[in-house]
Amino acid sequence: MKFLDQAKIYVRSGNGGAGAVSFRREKYIEYGGPDGGDGGRGGHVWIEAVEGLNTLIDYRYQQHFKAQTGHHGQGRQMHGAAGDDVVLKVPVGTQVLDEDKETLIADMDEAGKRILLLKGGNGGWGNVHFKGPVNQAPRHANPGQEGEERWIWLRLKLIADVGLVGLPNAGKSTFLAAVSAARPKIADYPFTTLTPNLGMVDLSQSERFVVADIPGLIEGASEGAGLGTKFLGHVERTAVLIHLVDATQEDIAGAYATIRAELEAYGGGLAEKAEIVALNKVDALDEEGREAAREALAQACGREPMLVSGVSGEGVTELLRAAWRQVLVTRGLEAQTEQMGEDTGWTP
Image 1 (cartoon, rainbow, N blue to C red):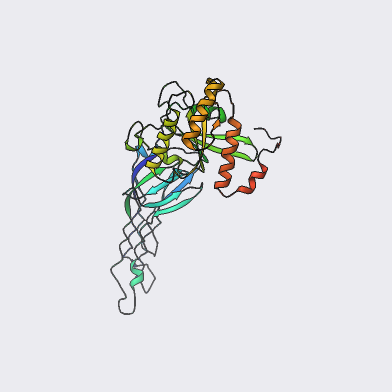
Image 2 (image 1 turned 120 degrees about the horizontal axis):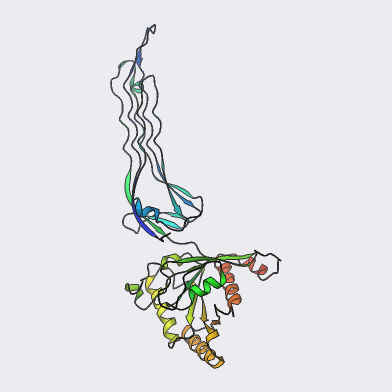
């Protein structure tokens, strides 16, 4: 299935049905009179967040969604039926934006959340509503009310607790594959990852969280270089970022500075998010090389980096537990940190 995280669609609610002009004419009924029924309501346009979806690809092939017009009223005071509604099913984390791509209409951040986007037009009154002592035989009825219409943007921001950032070939996909059941593409060339990947990490029964791996950034990404920053929106909702730096590259400090500069240029609060810096691929270095790389990265980021290897598993559990602890702190659930590391005997 192709990954699509942005789509522009046209939505329109249904018109209301027209009221009827009718008169009662039955044998053996001495007094007739108006008996035109009301028109039915036009269909609404709803949007609903559902589980099991992780792409907006369905909206690539259909961009126009129109609710049904309400049925017209009939004689004998028979009211028209309401038009069928349209329900747009989107992945959890989808934002609904106005045509200007800036005004937020709705944020579908919970499964089952359902919001009315456009209201259907009311049905028109039949002539039975207009009878009175002065006008006992009204020959007019109301037409149905017009529905609403607009163009909207759907933008998906994946729901994850932890985000992985780093330069291409920093080992993010290898790390994700090592800590979860996700199977991203892994290869020895830049930009192997072209779309975001999600993985569920199970450390224990009380330590479960979602990690998002996004395509690597390069210098100038905020200006469109490489894949640009179009996928950074998928880590805007995360509680903490794991910044992986390749220990085998020459300019370790420059690699860290490049990513930090792009995060700040992107905005969206990413530069202010809690960050855990990790030196990856340490299994490829000897002790002297490790110490030199660690010292260079520590000077660049102003803190002590963690040493990890997605291939050998060294330091991975410690890094994940540090990330989960930061998730709890950011979410305001510090009390749960007391349960971390307990051996519950639970196995997947």
